[in-house]
Length: 555
Image (cartoon, rainbow, N blue to C red):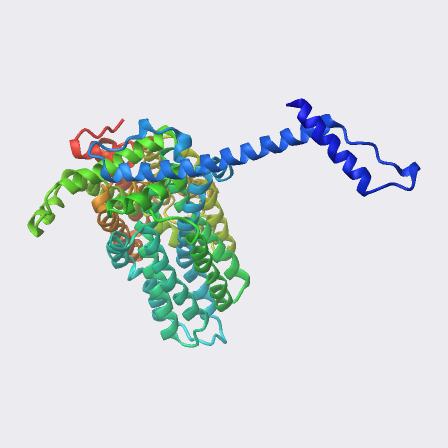
């Protein structure tokens, strides 16, 4: 065989010499080395064989993935995860290396967090809008009655928005519900930016306030269903951070920029949310619950990868869907009765207690009247904008701390520590005001320390934890309803506390008001000690099964 090759090469060489004679001997090219030609041919053969193997593997992997999904649809015994290797599930292993599950989960969570950030802008906007409207020469006259309507108009539709969102996310999906919220959010900011009369401002505030209610339960549910148990805590805690940052940013912009230009800047963020939503999949849990198994598996794999833990959780979700398919279609009476099931009623009771404890601890009352409290401690004449930005900055820093601590520690210890120190701070502030009785004192550091301690304590536990857990504790089939009802509770409580706080301070005095908030924080924390479960590190299916069995652990 080697002789044939050499003879052929020789023929080629002779033919080249005959057909292309050289006249310049000094430029004569040496004959090709036979060993070099053999090496080139071998390399070409290896490359061709490798390319064919890659093509065959890609075809085989696509066929395995189709078979995998078909097995999920048709198997009566659940997922056949053990029969397939991880490589067989991947269409291209390089995709996982470039875009890890953690990165994909971060991208999906960022879309929901950005919407929550826009909700924070709405919450902080009235604080910079009202002082500018009250200035002389304002294009829109504003008295005390008008100011109260502007502030209250955003809070008015928040609770109904939560209930509507529960239906929206169950009917159209979590991602599509986010799309639907972006439209009125953008419209509300445009109306405010273009407002030349009070009616347009009130209409814009109504739309933006309604969207705050809509995004309330939607963000936590979407993040809970798209993130692994290891990352779920930090991304859910980022919801409270986004609200705090949104309030701070709106105050920062509004301190130096006209209120209409501030509204124009706020229009940018719903648009950015739409862009992010366009590159992420729908919640796999919702897709599978609606029978869209293939799309659900693809979305789950894009978000969570193909690890053993992810496979096990996917198997549990699909097996639960199959079990539901085998059950007869429930009647209307049976659907109503199912709402009394322990896996719904138990977490609903826990979350209502949690939200009520947070709100009636005075978190928004102190936020709204913190400047007045500081004035009582250090006297009048302080710069309101400086005081407002200082409090916003402290709240933001503590929200960052909450993100770190929620990833490292469980929900229960954070709740108990936060509730205890919240109560101590409020009671301490009340006692100081009682002992001084409004008289000048050199101990102004005491009420300031109590106020700062209160903001720090409540920001690491009682504020972020209810929003985190309302996306974790409810079963898939009623997650929208349960999270909608529980989050509506917080907005109703928010309205009651903010509405009654001025009257309580005027009629009953600051001493009794702050003492009341401190006692509520203490009592609520005591109740939560006995009923609040630990959800850190547990899958959503595991949490649901434990509530259903009545064996939910509080440890």
